[in-house]
Image 1 (tube, one colour):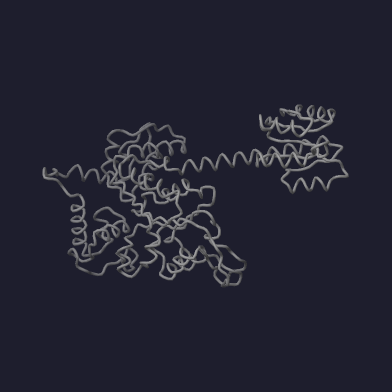
Image 2: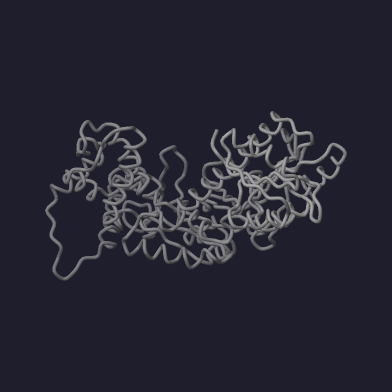
Length: 474
């Protein structure tokens, strides 16, 4: 049994001695006090894990000790000992925060079981506190990797906006770490000890999102057999992260706007409005300004969400962070797989630095996880990477291109590549994305950014289809 520190408080010396012998025989460290003032003094100098106190003592009783201890230390664990005839007083002590009570004459086995149970609870509380602190530390700004100036600006914005109550809109391509930034905002805010929940608006059917957000009453629809609270109620006083906010339907956008304005929700099938205090952090990889012009997103909701915008750079825009990210993921997956992979060869690192990373940090993480599993030596080599990563490097090696002395616009070069890919694919976004090695959504995002039309030539409109045959929204 793990030793613990117990403070025994009793005005009778014989009772103190008996408890000391029993508890020390089980490995506990025991201190004793004969009255309440002495017990309080000992506890303040060296807080005990558990206090065993007699309820009936002259001048000040165990109940007053309990009250003073819980005022001084809300986490104090106290077991009261009472005579058989004063059990009502013990029940009163339980209501005031005592862990448990024992009746005289004390039974040795019952005493040890109660003390052991108290220490199990104490250990669980300490472990829970440790894990919560560990979780909190893992989501602080300092835990996010990025020394590139663009990421330093992101960190500056997080620290500026986190202490406030304002809504935040995080923008950026898929895989750039938008939820990580949202969690950092929560961890650095006064709401850090309250719930954080995330909802991907694009991953849940539209028919279910409303009930997820607002909850429902029993009988509100077929299958609603009991009341269910929604996320806004579940995270009251906390933070709700709405990812892919641009995928919300217009009716749900209107309901979300009302929540942001009125600070209240109404469950589906309900008649009363419920006040909520929830901070909303939203994220999107779409161009919401373009969506507003197309009539797909409410302008008033956009301004409610867009109080502060945090734009996340793509991994292509901060390639100097790749070595540190690789090292981080390498340690993570080597430890998880039990392999002794210590690093990356220079050639392999060059390949990673030159790849265009359409899936951003999420793709890099996946590539390193795969490479660690396939690696046969103590360093990652080019052969451990997927074909698309190696193929991109081979293409770059074949290109003969020199930067002009008068300067070069990377954005204009990207625009021309997008236009040429769209022209070659006859305006079919999926085909153009494949030519450039991009995902469909990334290609869609880049086209919206540069306001490039779908036609074979830039600015010309032509029908296009998504990979599944649905009409494109680019």
